[in-house]
Image 1 (cartoon, rainbow, N blue to C red):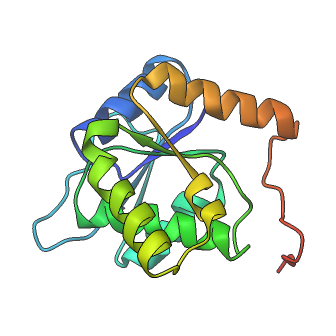
Image 2: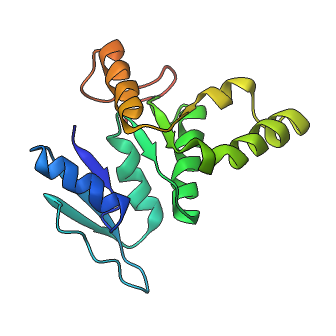
Length: 164
């Protein structure tokens, strides 16, 4: 797999390091912030972005899977953007995987009970757009199985979505 991360430290650095050590492509999409983010040293390619929306386009455009680890507002923004683009057929469907059931439990309960149950702002199918796992091997299996089922290397366009 090629790995694309936010290019920073922590789990992003670990993913870039794993890709590099396995001989794969390791890409970092760094963002210019007031408190400067320093690109980690395990990137074959490091791209720099001024705006988050441009960076999100690059995250999603080439995705075969999106693994979301516990994080803050930026993580939530990227997670929700992926769901919206898949839901509205602006992005071909691909696995969106949340790592760590304990961390995500409160959000998922709120989505199910409030967004779906109380207000009906999402459909039951929208809860199936993502999967929660606790083991990295489970996340990898989901992506590999998806790619095998699709028999694809590139991105599929969903019905109703036009090439630009």
